Image 1 (cartoon, rainbow, N blue to C red):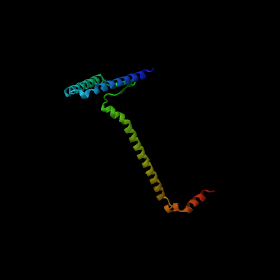
Image 2: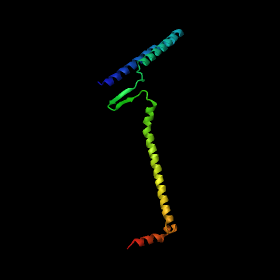
Image 3: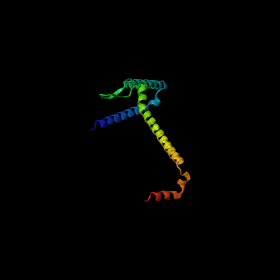
Image 4: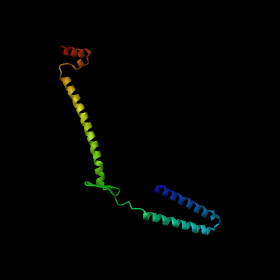
Length: 148
C-alpha cells in the first residue's frame, strides 16, 4: 500500500467520523433550552478561534528568503525582499533590446531615404529627361544597345 493512499484513507476516515459526531450531536439540539444552545455556540466560537491561532503560529513565516542553489558565481534566491535596484537591473536587458530594435529600424529607414535621394539626384543630373525612362521604347533601346 502506498503511503500517499494510506494518508488519504486516514483523512477520509477522519472526515466520516467527524460527520457522524456532528450528526449525533445535532439530533437532540432542538430539545435543548436556549441558554444551553447559546453557551454551546459561544464555546464553539472560542474553539474555532483557538484553532485559527494555533494554525497561524505553526505556519512558517515567509519573510526569510529561501536559498535554492549555490554556485561559484553567486546564490539563487527565490522569495523574500528584493531591492528596487535589482528589479530595475532585471528589466534593463529588455530596455536595451527594445532600444536596439528602435535604432536598427531608424537606421534602416535612413538608409532607404538616402538611397532614394541618390537615385533622384542621378536622374536629375543625367542628360536624359526622366520621362524617357518610362517610355516603352527606351527599354528596347537599352536591350538593343547591349547586344553585340
